[in-house]
Image (cartoon, rainbow, N blue to C red; front, side, top):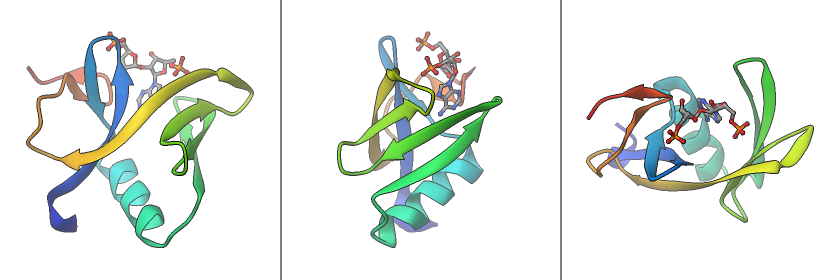
Length: 85
Ligand code: V3L
């Protein structure tokens, strides 16, 4: 259960949880001490930079979002764009 941690990216006024598979992938990479991970999300390549805790679009790094690792129980907008509250 990954110690109850999940991964989140920044929305306009709150946090979105990464989808389950991606959140697990981020947790594994983070625990392995990797500095960054590449993700394919809806046809776009993104880089997750653990040193700066950012997600950036690979071909347009100005499209950046803060990320965080936190408990799954924190208030959130939803999961990967699907609202849950
Ligand atoms: N997982 C899923 N969708 C993502 C992700 C991700 N890790 N990163 C970006 N997108 P950009 P509010 C978000 C989507 O960064 O109202 C939310 O999931 C992103 O979706 O410029 O601002 C919501 O669906 C956006 O639609 O490359 O809180 C939506 O924004 C698109 O990719 C609105 O959320 C471009 O993001």
